[in-house]
Image 1 (cartoon, rainbow, N blue to C red):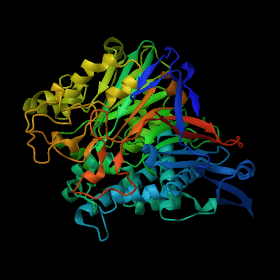
Image 2: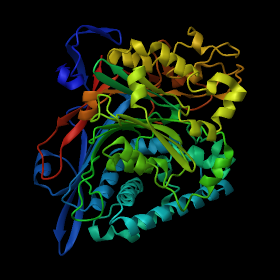
Image 3: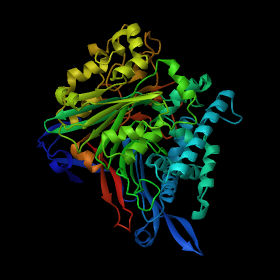
Image 4: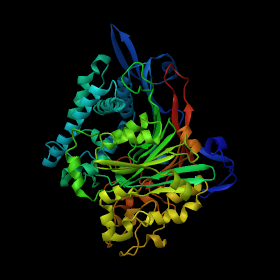
Length: 605
């Protein structure tokens, strides 16, 4: 098919002529291959009242069902991992029903439709981490998670009627309960059974698929809890339990447009990817007169049965783009705050989504996010507000977290003066740089730990001017020429490392090499994707994305070439996929207060 990339869709200020996109000449008309398919897996939860009880039914979808059912939630899923490296998922709920029912059934439908991916991701990552009977380290982890779950449930129940933060936490817990029930093949058919007592059973389920949600938080948590068998452990496939998130991000001004991009760096075993769109018309608080949340619709890159992105990369209906890169904590005395935080904190994955839903501005996002700081998954967050552009105060806010503190700064002027803002796993704000221990690391190891002198800072400073459109932005975010680029050199044997690039390929380092810094060495870790938007796409909640390690100047990653571990379940062997662009299709007509605009993917060639 042919699809017209018009200026209104992708760039209201540039005219597109003939370009080179991933080695293929293109003009105004891009040839696209639609991969969404004519028959995505679509399911819904319908509701019917009978003898004073509201009963639920699970249905697969046809046109008649959609138009004549009273629906609580609907979901559409398309699994195309072997074709594009991505799956797509849309979940939408109806404001005709209480928010907790919307949230529960949204979670249930997501996990039910993605069950094969979810089980595979579970086995590929944390399934073997804490088998029964629990080890001593696992008992420590379980105690913390159970106490923390009880704290969140209690606060959400007490304060949800008036406090937006706690109400949204409670709804996310309902979503997680739906996911847990679907994973455990449990179906609750009556509304009155979905009550507060039932939600409290989450306290006993924290060692189940709840662990998947902690992909980002878990690394810092196990460090704080001093549980070495979990921090260094591997599953039966030979892959680590704990991912090593880092990432690269770039926000770049081009004429009157702005491009925003993020590259996830992580362990390769987690690469079962899902591009998601949530449309949840929830209230701000548990009150009949409450307004709908500003971020009722969110598009984001994610993984099976995760309520958050973890990468992180979000587009919200409040016209906010939110992303982050992770900062390490070298000041180990801060872990004491985390150890004592089970009854006074909320994990980052949950606070981030609460802020996404409630915030209309970057300042508001930060205020919601810093409440009940867990001190885990300590990132530099970037919040870009398209409503404030061009260059108004608050256009680009950053927030940096450590245990006990979240510092923030308006960096709009820096973006305007430099023409770009880059983020690469080092704190920018002075008090965070010092308190995290990063400044002390710079005294020992030099420029690698200096914000404006580390390798990626130099690459972005050298090459950001090359970005003029989507193809050139993608090229920079996938950049890795470690054997030829002098900025990738190191005092190592061999004298370079593939980690010193915008998108790392750490498995290309020499397993027998000598590297003075651990992150420069061989490991099954690197850049696992890239996501790009511009101003118009942030408003449309669409993105361009590519899955898998970079292959522009390097051989594609292949599991069959890795001899010391088993290929993770459902992973393709060869990761050489084209970028995809998301769009929305009206699969069926609108039914009441629920939308059938489903996220679809198209390959760019």
